[in-house]
Each structure stands twice: as C-alpha cells, then as structure tokens.
Figure 1 (cartoon, rainbow, N blue to C red):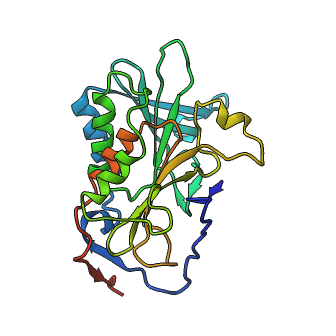
Figure 2: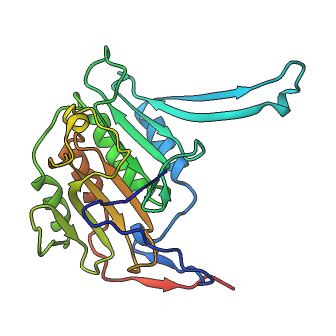
Length: 262
C-alpha cells in the first residue's frame, strides 16, 4: 500500500535507474540509515521502563517440524507502564509505504484504558534518526495525558524557526523548510491510511476540508526520492510534534556529499 507523503503537494519521486546512490554524511538527519533505528528506539523504551512483547502468528501442519512453521506475522510491541501509549516495529509486517518508503515504527496513544482504540497515531520510516524519534518518545512518556491537546500549530513552527528554518513563503502559518531546502515540515491533509481517533476523520464528505496533520520529511536532492518521512495524525498534540522537529539539527548549511564506492 502506498500513500503520498503530503497530499496537498502530491509527489511520487522516481527511483532513478542505473544511477549510483549518494549519502549525506552530515548533518545527522541527512546522513541516512545507520541500521540502528530499532536498537536506538528500543534502548529508549528500556530506559523509560516500557514493556517489550513479541507477537508471532503462524500456521503449522500436523507433525510439521518447528523450523518449517510458516510465520504469517511478527510484531514487536512496546507498551508504557500505564498502557496508555504503545509503539510497534512494523517493518517486517508488510507495512504500507509513505513517500515510497516503508513505515518502520507506528506510535499510538489513547486517553482511556476502557477503549482499545488509539486516539492518535504517528508513523516513521526507517531512516528517521533514532535520537530524534527518541526525543519524541521521551516527550510522550513524560505526559500524564498523552492524548490531551496542548498548544497550537505555532509550537511546531517556533521549534524549527528557532533553529534557523524559514517559514514557507506562500503558507507561513503551516510550513517551514531548512535553509538549504532539504528538510520540510508542513501542516496539511494527512496521507491516506493514517489512523486517527477523531470521528470527523471518518465522516468528512468529499467536498469538505479534511482534518490537518503534520508531515516532516527530508529530500536532500529534489526529485531523487525522500531520505526519510514522518506523518502525524490530526489528533497528535502539537507539543509532541514540536519535540520531534525541534530535535533536528540547528543548521543544515554545512553538508558533505559522499558517493558510494563502486
């Protein structure tokens, strides 16, 4: 399943054929995948005291050896001590794609233990820096009521403009970009398949304005594809989104492009 990253400006960047990849060495959030996203985030959960569970579903025939068992789904689930917030490592579970990138982590929260449904969810692709996602999760853990709205969109924009980002010229109240135009944050219509507990997200008519949520992404080379992407459902509190984008580097002026060895 595929979803445009930001439907207001639908871009599905092609994957150039027979063109060597290039890796941004610095700053950190343009450096690419270090292969430690799961470990870095799992370490954060361990430090916060969250419980880790592995759910495996499979199919086994009579007299079938254990090593021949067909695993249909395997999910690593991390649950907060109060069970109001949880996160799933879904990269191996045939996740849907966001901007041509698979979802790696899905983070959710609810306001009431009596409800089995999440009030909001946020989604992160594999190359999101683990320390940036860790900042988001630490802020989430520190909240007494993880689904309670707090503050408005200005919290998010103030968090990045304080680090030298520029407000969008056409929509200064809903978007910002870093000084090199490689990284973006925008408030707008969320991509399809992004889950949210607001009932208005389910009953909106085709001619009505959809609920707005935050999207963040890095696209170091225009048209060459996204490096990473994050999508926040409309009900994700703005202060938590601000924690995420505010932990991105203060400057993106100094960059080094390294071509891979042939």
